[in-house]
Length: 395
Image (cartoon, rainbow, N blue to C red; front, side, top):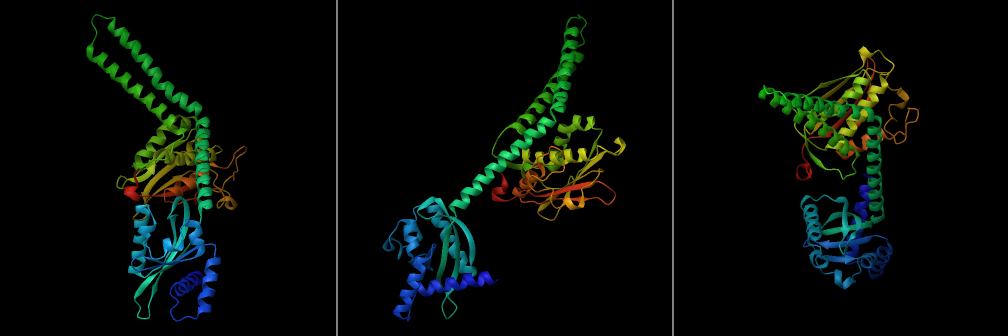
C-alpha cells in the first residue's frame, strides 16, 4: 500500500510538471530539472491520447525531439499500429475505471526490440473529472533477454531430463518393441505355412494379417513415443484428456513396472473437462513422479508395491492429479526442498527431475507439491488449468 501511494504521489507531481498552472517559474524550472534527470521515460497525456509533455530521457530513448512528441497522439508517433492501439486501449480502461495500471510490459514505441515496464495513473481535476494520464516507464530489455535465456536453459534441461529417463528405460523400451516384432515374425511364418497348404482357411489367414497390422502399429507407437521424448521442440499446448494421457504413460512404463514388481492403478474421473497442455511435457512430469515412487518402494515387499494415480476436480478452473505410493516416504526436513534445483537424496542423482517438473506445471498455470501419507508412503500432487486461456490455450 505504501508503494502504491508513493507511485500516485509521483504521478501527481508529474501532472503538475506538465500542467504548471499558477506555479512560480522557479518551481516549473525545478520540476523540469528533476524530471529531466530521471533515468526513466516520464510522460503525460490528455484524455484524447495526445502527449502533453515528456522528459529529456524520453526523447533520448525514442530518438524523437520534443516537438515531434508533444502535441501528437500516440498513433501519430508510433508507426506500429497494433502497439499504438494497445496503448490507447490501456489508457481508455484507466480513464474508465479510475484505476492505475502497474507493470505493463510493452515495447518502446519507436523500437519493438526494446522492452519497457510502464505504470500509468488517471489524473482528475477539482471536480473529480478525469483530465489525463501521467506515467513513467523503465527499460527492461536486459531483464527480458535474461528471462529468454533462462527459458531456453530450462528447455535444454527438460530435454536432458527426458533423455536421462529414456536411458533408464532403455531395456524396457527394447522389450516393449521386441514383443510386437516377435509376434509379427511368428504370424508371418504362420501365414506362409497356411499359403503352402492347398486347403488354406481364408478367414484364419485374414485374422493373421490383421494381427500383423495391429502389432506393427504397437511397435510404431512405441517408436513414436520414444522419438517425441528425445526430440527437441518448442512446446505445443493442445487439448488433452488427462485420463487418456495417464493410460499412455502406464503403457510406456509397463515393462519397467513389471520388472520392478510394481502395480499401477488408475482412479479416473470421466466427468472432468479437457486440459490445455503440452502432451510430452506432461507425460514427462507423470513419468518422473512414477519412477521416483517405484524407487521409493524397492525396500518393501513386492505384494505392497502399488502406485495409485487419481484424477479429480480441483476447483472450477483446475484439474488435480495425485500419485500415491507405499514406499519409505520423504524425510520431513526435505519435504520443502525436493523441488529445488540440484537437491537430491539419490546417490549419483543431479536433482533436476522434480525441479523441471515444477517448472513445467507452473508454466501450465498450476501448482505442484508433495506430502507424506498417514499410513505410509508419499504422494505427489499437481494441478493444471482446464481448457482455456489465450484462444482456448491451443497453439
